[in-house]
Each structure stands twice: as C-alpha cells, then as structure tokens.
Image: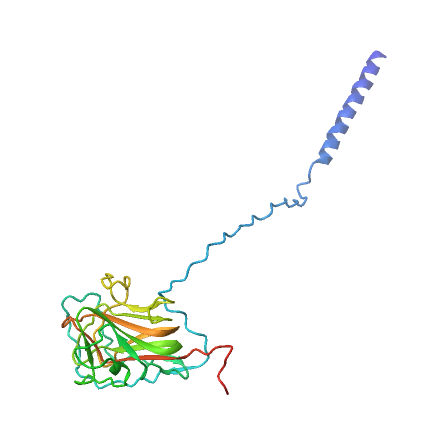
Length: 275
C-alpha cells in the first residue's frame, strides 16, 4: 500500500515537471517568426557655424553689372609702328607673353563709349618735357612726333576727371608705341574724389615689389604696341581715373599718347533720364 502511494506521488511530480517543460517550450520564439525591427536612434543633427562676414577688398574691381545686352566696344586702333617684339628686356621680370594675334573684341553693355574723350587731365608733372597734358584725351593715338606727352623721370601720374560718377567697363592706355618698350610700375586706379581718398580701387598694378608705394601688384609687365593695354574694369563706379608709371625699359622718363575710358554715366534712381 505504501509503495502504491509512493508511486502515485512520484508520478504526480513527474507530470508537474513535464508540464512546466512544455509550457516553457511554448513560450520560446518560433524559428520562423518574423524578427521585429529594432528602434533606431534619431539622426544626429549637425549645426553649421556662422562664419564672420568677409570685409570686401576695396582694391578689387567690382562684379560686372547685370545689364542685359552687350556688344564690342568701338575701339579704333592707330597705325602700328613696328612689327614683332624683342625677346629680352634687361631688368624686366614677369613679362607678359605676346598673344601673337590681334586682341579679341571686348564686350560691354550697349551704349558704352569713350567717356574720357576731351575730358580734363592733370599731371604730377605740371610742365611736361614734350607735349601738353590735354593731348592725353584728344583722340589722337598715333605714335608720330607731336602726338605724345613726355613727363619727367621717376614716378609720375596723370589723372582724368570724368565729370561725374560713371560705370567703367574698360580702360585703354597707350604709353608709347613707336618702339617696343616696357613701362615700369604701371598702376591704374579709380576713386570718387580727386585726392584719391574716397572709395579708391586699384584695377591694375604690376609693381611687384611695392617700390612706388601703391601696394604689391600681381599683374604682369607688358610690351607697348599699337593695340595699347586694355584693362577690364568690370563696371566699377568712379569719377576719377589715375594712371601711374615709373620710367621704362629705355630710360627713366614717362610717356603717354592717349587714355580711353569706356563706360556710361551712372543714372540716379531718383532722377532717371527723360524719355
């Protein structure tokens, strides 16, 4: 009888244990059950630092004006006085390589003209060795005798008063093209005032050692030809144009034949031109 009770108890315990085993097995994940996606962390938001505003360089030409329509500026070239250029100029560094072909047309907004023609000119040398200062804007670009002005030795400049603020797109300079020469420390600037204290911008500077005091220039020296030197002014606004030089590859003197300034008057929004 005792053995029978023991058997019943043992059998009951085994049944309970087996029940727990079966129950635990049913709670396990089925191997075919779809795996639930894990929650992903929110993407990291990168913040952008606010950089300080860059102060504009007043010696840089301004961006061209967004004017619709353009055409080649009406340049009339003088007669060439020599063919080809010498390969060497003693003491001249950073020399621009000649194009070997005519210069491409320069495009500017329609209506652009030579606004320097017959405008008043002044000079650091009030008594030129040859010629008169007014000849620099008289329209004569030939290299013959009687067509050029010769200023004294060393650093000299000339200044043109356009009479009012103008959008300037190009400046064209003929120093002397009767023979191949390289003029030194050529610097071209525009400003709002005759003393060149207000809104001064340097458009060209090939003085690479600042020997003339206008800052270190990065433009190349060039050989004078009948085409003159065309400087892209990019629509900069100014009234006064100043050109500086410091002798040339032949002597210490400074020459000018003609300076042309291609632009158009600045029109006030408050006083538009009459139709």
